[in-house]
Length: 229
Image (cartoon, rainbow, N blue to C red; front, side):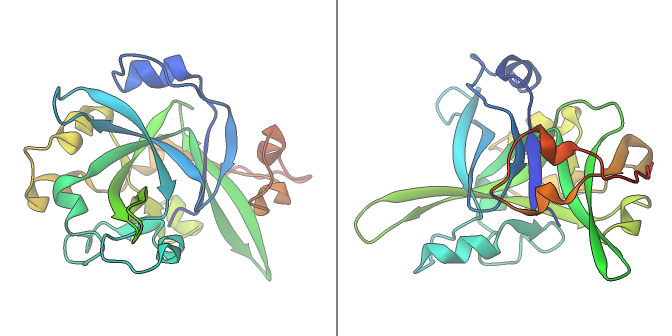
C-alpha cells in the first residue's frame, strides 16, 4: 500500500516532466498524509494538454452518502479496480498522475515498525498511477478526490511490505492519461511493479510517524542506519 509520500521538488521540475504550460506553485512536502490536499496531473477535456489539479487524498465515490469514506480509499488494488463500484468508472474515464519523489512504508522488526523512505535509485521525480472522482454534496458543493493504485511489491520491497504503489514509467504517461483509452484492459498492463533495481529504500526516524509533522527532519536517518538496496 501507500499511506504517506513526499514531493519536495520545485515547480519547474514538475512542469518539465509532465509537460505543463506553467510551473505549479509548490512548497516542499516531506510527509503527505491521507485526507490532505495533493497535486495531480490530468488532461484538459477541450485542449488535450496536461494540467495541474488539486485533489483530496482518499477517493470519495459519487454514490457515497458521507465524505468520510474517502479516508479508507487512499489506495486501490490495480488488479480489481475495474470491478469495484468505487473505482470502475474512474479507471475508464478519470485517470491521473500523482507526482512524488518518494513514499513511506513501515517494516516490522520484532515488535516495532521501522519507517522506510522509498525513492527511485537515481533519486528522480516520478508519478504514481492515480484515479480521481468528483463527489457532489446535497447542497451542490463538490469535492474532487483521488486514490493511488497499488500492485504486488517487487523482490526488494517485498521484504518491507507485500504491496507497493504503481510507479509509472515516463513512456507510459501519455497512454495512461489518454481519454480515448476507455477499456481498462488497454491500460492495466502498465500497472506492474517497478523492477527492484530501480528503487532504493532507507530507514528514517520515527518523526515521520506523526502525520502532523513536516519538514526535512522526516528524512533524517535513525541513529543506527541500515541500507536496503
